[in-house]
Image (tube, rainbow, N blue to C red; front, side):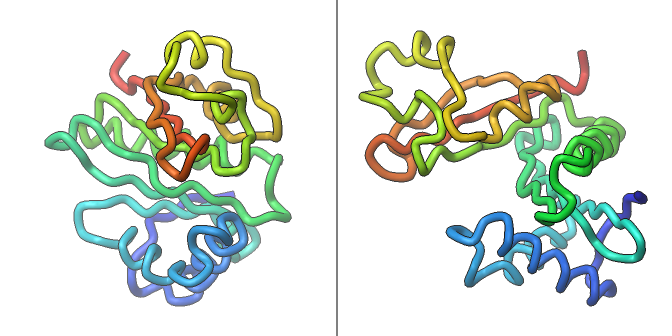
Length: 177
């Protein structure tokens, strides 16, 4: 597998990126995947692709924030047939390396719980917030566990961000320590 920085000249890879986004997040990107891919290509952002056997199998994007000291990882997607094979882990590792070289101190992300995949979707998250975060359990393969294995930790939540009982889980990792 090799990593490439995606750009507007790579039409085939960009079409594959849009397909991967629709496949990974049909509820979010089904009707706007091409626009999300174009946003990833904006001058100040990073759009990283993982290529295996001549085709794109995953992508990761990053958006600079806070005068480039903190970046948001958005999105991360791996085609279905390549999941659980280390592609996502490798993409995040390569993205971290690139961002560290650009002066990034913190990489963070939001990971929605829209389908009751964690215990954070149970009850009122405005009550005993940090206790509930401390005792979070994964109920349905929510990606927060994947990110924890890569060294990310929960740094906050936005209760009801996606509807009642559907929080956004914010995770971060220091790239400087």
